[in-house]
Length: 178
Image (cartoon, rainbow, N blue to C red):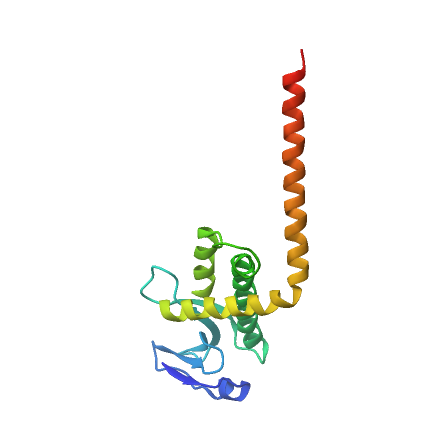
C-alpha cells in the first residue's frame, strides 16, 4: 500500500490496476484517508480505521474520486471525532479542575471516547494519546471559563439545598397532619 500526499493532480495521474486487481494509495496528510483504484481505472476515495475488537481495518467508501471534496469529508470526520471526544472528557476534566475529591468515573463516556478515537487511531496507544490530547484541549477550553463553572456549581448546590428543605418541610407537614 503506497503513501503519498493526495493532490487532485496525483489522483488523476494514478494508473489502472492490473486486470482483476485493485490497489490503494493512502494520504500522508490525513491518516486513514486514501484512494482505491480498480483495473478499470475507477478511483474511489476511502476512509480506513480500526475498530475495537477487530484485527483488520474497516474501510468505508466516501465518494467516487472528484476534485477536492473527499478530503473535506475526511477532515469532517476528524473534526467530528475530535469535538465529540473533547465533549465526552470535559465533564471529568471540569470535575478534576474545579471540584474537591476524585472525579466521578463515567464508564460509558470512557467507552464512547475510545470508540470515537478508534475511528481515526490505529492502535490502543494512539487511542490513549488522542484521548489525553482531548483532555488537554478540554482543560484549555474550561480554564478561562472557571468563573462560569463555579457559578453553575454554586447554583447547583443552592438548588440541592432548597430541594432538601422542601422535602423536609413536606415530611414535617405529613407528620403534623391529623
